[in-house]
Image 1: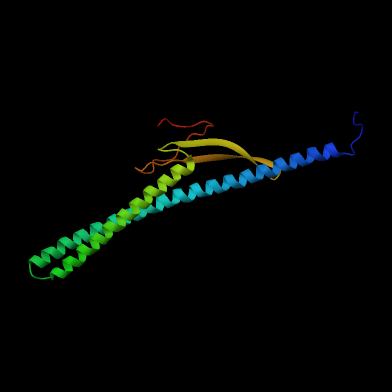
Image 2: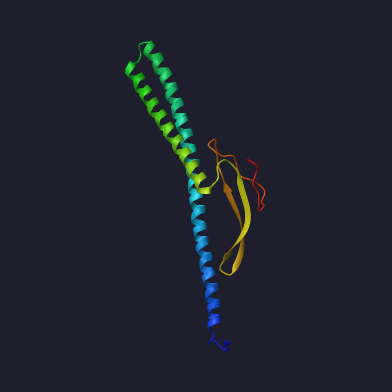
Length: 166
């Protein structure tokens, strides 16, 4: 038995398969966007935490300078010892906050590392395309990986397999 005419069912099945492939491609694009957004959020959180750490370092230096002044005033009988104790307590609080933010930074980097599947530093730059409506649009994909020692920088060149040696 050979089918002579199927009423257009084969054509409809092919069209349905094509549409399903387009829907799956769009779902992959949405998931990829979510991953990129999460990586960006992690990276920006690391940068924000770095700035908070810098700010805490400045506060700690100010408190240490103030403590030296107050200790000199206490020795000369101009200030009370309680003023010195208050500054020491603030220094301890600042030290605790510094440890907290350093821990937060480390955990963010570890999360980024787990999220990307890589440990250590390297930059991946890739040039690819995506479909937007009826056009194919080229775009640059840049992924940055960090170490616990900090941010190193962006790569300038673009290639499909750029991956500096570790």
